[in-house]
Length: 473
Image (cartoon, rainbow, N blue to C red):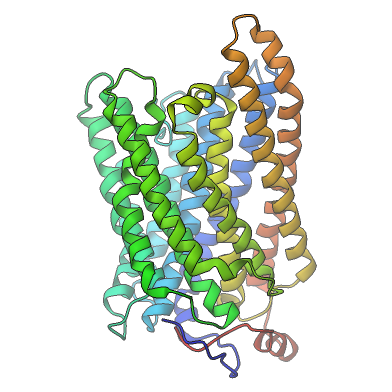
């Protein structure tokens, strides 16, 4: 457990940070590039919803293909690269030794992103699969599995080669994600693409995979960052830290069973969605423990990093409540197959993204050895993300609720539904533009940080921030 005493010594740029600089910086640069590209594709997708004639004459960018492109770019491009970068850096720091095998991270990152580019090209020409969150062509997915393993291996070495027997919650979550992703990714490949199961079972496996991607890869990476950042910045012990292990296991044991909530009303045995609803209830135990452990993230500390983390944590908790409430058969009958599903996915991605932004802003100066060039730009990015994400989720959620309630009325035409949801979709489009500008600013800012040269003044500014470091984890 992290000690409560603040470290009065200068904040260090250690050998650990230097050993991880090239590998994590490469992953973060590619992640931010995918984030901007995914945002542009999401903008095109939103415009196509409320203005169907947009790009209607371009067969390569039909609505379905753009939807698959933006999901893939954001989840496999931005989320996986950023999660790996932050996760590997955390394991190296908490392990207490310089990162071993950093070249394998770079090699795996290159192959992962090259495979992703080829896969997006396959989607454009119509070779995508029909499974949500697994739409990359089948011929590219084995390469991605090997590339992920190459990136994860140095993280596992940092875990096994740690200097102390004591472990931390951040390590549990990251190592769990590094081991679990290859498992459910390979199982989904086999059961859906290479030796496919038949009929309705494909939908069961696809929903299982999609839920695992969110609950056993993205969620653990985000929670790991929260457990690391809060005591480091606040300089205090995490309350009731002994309970953290129960939150970890409740997520891993029950999170994998929640996928069936998307199958309510489908041609499946009733026990499958029922079990998913029960699992969603049990996962709330994980969220309750996080509130007990990490509630101090919401206190006013003056740290812009904690502001990003607090908003992301709030979205993470809200996402858990939404998972439970809208998996019930009564509400699912209204929200299924509507814009509300996009709002729900965006809520989970927002939680992950804001926590990753916090991690990037914290680890960036330690990788580069200099402070961020512009504090004002960081605050502008925070406000843009806060307004943009909130507006995007709320507008899509309202549009989805209107759409779902009207679809249940025989006297309402599809044209009338489109007219009622059109203003909210325009608001969502404006919010997406704001997010693109903010994410582009972050990308440029990060490149400027890596290119900046250390000076006496910059080092003094970096080494004496308020509540920057506490004693070693």
